Every structure is written in structure tokens, then in C-alpha cells.
Length: 139
Length: 290
Image 1 (cartoon, rainbow over the protein chains, first blue to last red):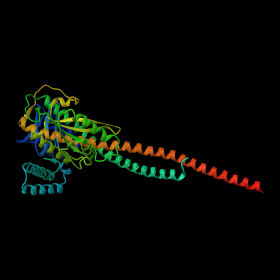
Image 2: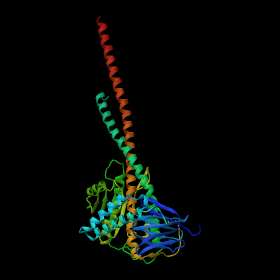
Image 3: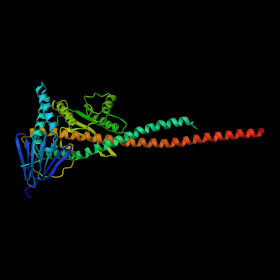
Image 4: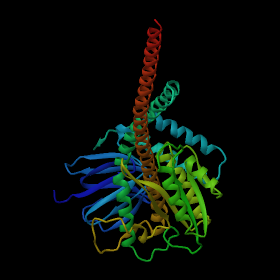
């Protein structure tokens, strides 16, 4: 199809996604951003949240990402993140436990750094829980 | 000629040692396989994240972020990754001596070690170790890479160090590993001279939401990814080196055993011959007397 571009989502542990797509919606610092074909060259910070991908066959899929960054180049778009997971890869029990743990840590008195780390851990668990409840294919 | 008891004793000792080296060889083979499969999965990220950052730096002008700008303080920090244990050929020795040579180029250094061998080495040489990461050499996980990165960035942000390097053993193949140094911070285009970008274009990149925000988030992510890659490669290198070392040790033991068993048989033969000639001598002496 003419309106597609090449998207790669890469994590240190694997190549998560590598295909032609129509668009990709990712969480950035100030809300969701969508990248479509012929987007200007851009570097954006990716924050914890759900990523929606419009595949070339017209279906939408959703996955959960943690922090990273995204580079749009004329030839392809690359997203680097620590972990990206499909809903069926998410261990809901583990995410639930992680959320509880992070909440517990947030209740205690901590240094600013520890506070931020707990906060990130909580956000990570919450997005896993949110995305994990759904199917991979979405409307 | 040695006596048979001595030879038997050393043969037993060697075959005991051989059993151990054989077992270690098998263990490190299986660990190496797992480590290499992790490395294969990581390699794409490791190469592309560096190419990506090089690309970003090449296409942006007037960057003035602390992670990018070089400050002239001259104090450098070295993260040295070595193994927890010895018995792996020249692996620890090579990477540690390489690190030491690199460190001598800087006036003031901070040392951050991963692995007990690294700590022991620098203590022996009389260096102060500033941060010591435990239990990471044997378990290269993303969470560990994150912890190391947090510590490094905290020190860097507070202005204690001006440059951060990581020294690790680069994994080329199970038979070839070489010590390697990467400059983590500040992120400069000159760090990536040996990295190839696949695509060239002339447009300037735009940053969303802002240069500062992007670099604040991107650089830590980049370092976590790189750190994880280094840990994984060091782990794969260590086990490959140990595998080779143990294979050689087992081979040597086999050779020694073959030599000793020859010697043992000779000694046995010699004993028998002496006994026979003694008996014959005795018989002849007896027959003469009749």
C-alpha cells in the first residue's frame, strides 16, 4: 500500500515489531502522538503507556510500552524502549503485585529519587494492567 | 623409573581434576548457549541504538544539554565489567589490564566495578573502588542495567564526574572475545566513529516536546540499553572463555593420563621382567646345586 511506512520497535531483549504500518499512536510527554507516512524527521520522548499500531491490513493492535524514545527518519521510524509487550504476554498477577508493591513504597517516606522510581514502577504496572485486560486486536 | 604406586597416585589425582574440568566445561557450554542467544536478541538493539543516536546527533545543531556538552574537569569514571570467578583463561586478566591501561590516560578516575575479580584486581593494585555492583556479573538483567544506570546518572548529574566509560569484553564469536571501551557520557558524535548509519539525509531533526525533555529521557534509556548489551556480552564472553579454558584443561588431562599410563605400564613391565629374571636366576642357582 502506498500510505504505509516501515516501523521498528526494538527493546534490549528482542526486536519486538518490524513491519510496514499505516500509523502508530504512542504516548508522549504531552499526550498521544500519531506518526503517519511522510512525517517530518523527529525525535520524541516516549513515556509509559499503550501504543496503538494500525497494521497494513487495516487492523489495529495494541501493546504496552515503558519509557523510551522514537526516531522518525525519512526511510523508517524506530522506537527504542526498555520493554514492550503484547497483552497476551503480560503477566497480570505479576503486574498486580508490582502495583501493590509500588503503592506501598509510595506510602513510605522516601528520598526524591526513590519516590520517582516508585512512581515509575507504579505507572509501569498500571499500564500493564490496563493493556493486559484487552485483546491484541482492537477496534 | 618411578614406582607404580606413585604413578597410580598421580593418575588418580589427574583424573579427579579432569572430572571437574569436564563438568565445568559442560556447565559453561550450556550457560554460554543461553548467553549467546540473549546476545543475539540484544545485538540488533545494541547496534541500532548507537546508530540512531549518532544519527540524532548528526542532524541536530546547537545542542546544549549536560549529557551532550563536554565539561573540562578531567575526572573520568570507569565501569569495569569482569567475572565473579576465575578459571576462565585470560578473560579477567585481559579486560582488567586493558581497563588499567585506559585509566592511566586520565588524571583522576573513579572506579565502578562489576564482578568480584574486578574488585580484587583493583584492590591489589592499590586503587580505591568507589562503587561496587554485586551479583550482577552472573545475572545480566535489564533491572540490573537500570540500577547501574541510575547510580551513574546520579553521580554524573551531581557533577562528580565529567566522563563515563564502560570497559567490557566484546563478544565476536565463541572463539573470539576482545576487551573494548565505550564512552557513555557525555554523548558525542566522535564516540560513534566506528558505528555505521544506514541512511543519510540532510534535514534537521525536530524534537518533541523539547530538546531538553527529549535528552532527559532519551539518554538514560540509551545508557540502560547499552549497559544491558555490555553485561550480556561480558557474560557470553566469560562463559565462552571458560568453556575454551576447560576444554583445553580436559585435553591436557587426557594427554597427561595417556603419558602416565604408558609410564605405568612400563614400570609394571619392568617389575615383571625383574621378577622373572629373579626367578630364573634363582632356578638356575638351584639347578646348579643339584
